Image 1 (cartoon, one colour):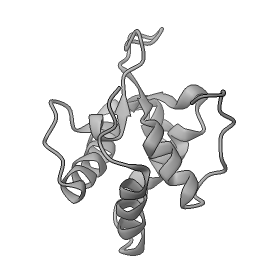
Image 2 (image 1 turned 120 degrees about the horizontal axis):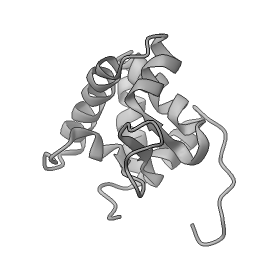
Image 3 (image 1 turned 90 degrees about the vertical axis):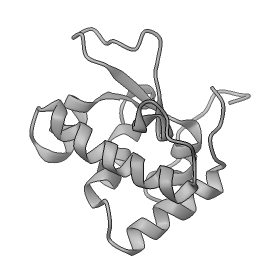
Image 4 (image 1 turned 180 degrees about the horizontal axis):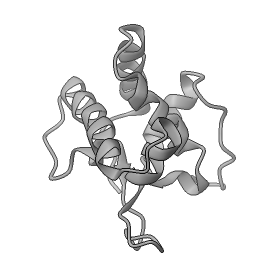
Length: 127
């Protein structure tokens, strides 16, 4: 999985958005996803855990909006799916309930750790 931007760049964008009080729910979704096993979530699960609504469209709107803003701030080319700026797909990308699952990019995880939004995860050697 190629790195799109360095940890410092993600941290700078997240800090700027937080300072401006923008994408507060998107930030909460990143934090919630970080706390899930292997940082893997579905939009329905994120919407349920952050907004109390088990509706994937809510997750798509909020998480996708954050991803689009981060992409623009990092001046990255637009991917097929905006969430690719924040996440990758595990293998297989469909979970046991038939929902599309995605994993936080390692550089995103490290950026939110660096900002102190979450505690550091234990990593296997070499990761």
